[in-house]
Amino acid sequence: MRARARGGLMTPGRRLAVGTIAVLVLAVVLVPLAVRLDQQLVDLRAAGLPPTLAHPFGTDEVGRDVLVRSIYGLRVSLLVGLVAAVASVTIGGLVGLVAGAAGGFADRLLMRVVDGFNSLPHLLFGIFIVALFAPSATAVVVSVAVTHWTTAARIVRSEVLSLRGRPFVDAAISGGSSRLRIVLRHFLPNLAPQLLLATVLMIPHAIWHETALSFLGLGLPAHLASLGNMINDGRQSLLAGDWWSSLFPGLLILVPTLAVSGLAQHIRDRANPRWRSELAL
Image (cartoon, rainbow, N blue to C red):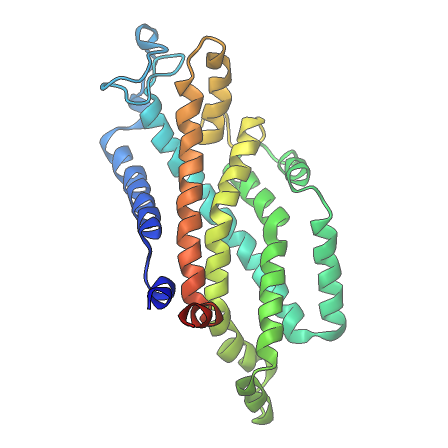
């Protein structure tokens, strides 16, 4: 009975993950409504203050509140990560769908393309892509989408190959359904849970990718409050003992990653009937 509940209900850890995501989303929505970023004026008299009740995350080297800037940075990173994840999964999903549905030469050709992209170091290839553009959110999205679509392609292709052997697909083919109708009527609805799971799992990966590029000075513009830029700015403060300037933005990268991982596990358990049936035994 407990195993069945485990597959169908959320465990305390997963409730915590969902609650954490809800709190973060509320923060990135409500804090900008209460405090505008351009109100964070330079105040050298308050520079380098440690965490206090007035400034829970302390202040940076020019006196700006680290908490407010971290929330703004999290908003930017989440938005860029979400758009990049959707773009990546969309590209990979289309490639995997075409490869699995077409089969034959098209399948072999597309899978060789996937193998070729997988052989490239993702970070170095991403740096090469963003180096072609001026630092911007668009450059980061393109970099993540181009370097990370292969995982979704393999997942979708594998699922389509599995669906092609199902009786309802054979019945549709015997009934004279076109390939396009089979894709739209049978493949896409069954692929939706896998595509959702792939998108959710890609979001923290895209955030880390954006953070790494911004930390290297190749991602988002330096004046924009993003977590990667804040960690990069806080490097100099570490030499003076101001650990909070880098620690708290770093935690705001780690916390969403762990929370999204917990949510993804729940989506996986709900979307995979075989997993739920094994838990119920």
